[in-house]
Image (tube, rainbow, N blue to C red; front, side, top):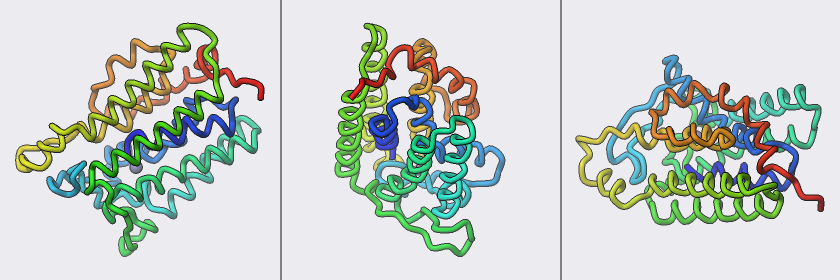
Length: 256
Ligand SMILES: [Zn+2]
């Protein structure tokens, strides 16, 4: 799933208005930030198998630590525990843990049955395969995104023009990134040129969005988004340090 993960981060703002969008996005995309690092370390593996699904040719045949249900629940608990240790906010810690776990369940909708239940090599794998019906998958993501944006907008108020424009630019960029994943030419290439396809592009959609979300207070940096996934994936901490500054621009919870 692409922008659906950002949708739940945006929506979560409603539950914990004082927690930064950067932190909520980090939680919602935690598994996909972890994944390329584990790939780099040779712990998890992926293959390019054209025709694997109609949206992505990536064959996620081995990602038991970042994407098995059991480890995901542990990551969720760990994320929530670290957040609580740092911020002493039980409600926000629970929301962050739920966001980490939500990633697996959203992936479940779109992946073919490649999501393991446990890290064991013999584990059964699940996935509802919406990626084989691109139109329906895109519709689900769009509906999620629209709901997330709506909830976020009802919860926050821009303090100035910069806050207003930065938010709308970010939302538009995420939408563009999501649309790119489902664009007709890209899907046509996937369907018609299996032998020639090198699809590093589809793996940076998710991670790029995380970096952009977390660094929208450094907007010019976001212009460099079309970098390859691995480089982006290993630098998030440097960017995320600045996420708390977003409060200055956008994360201004309205009293309700
Ligand atoms: Zn994922």
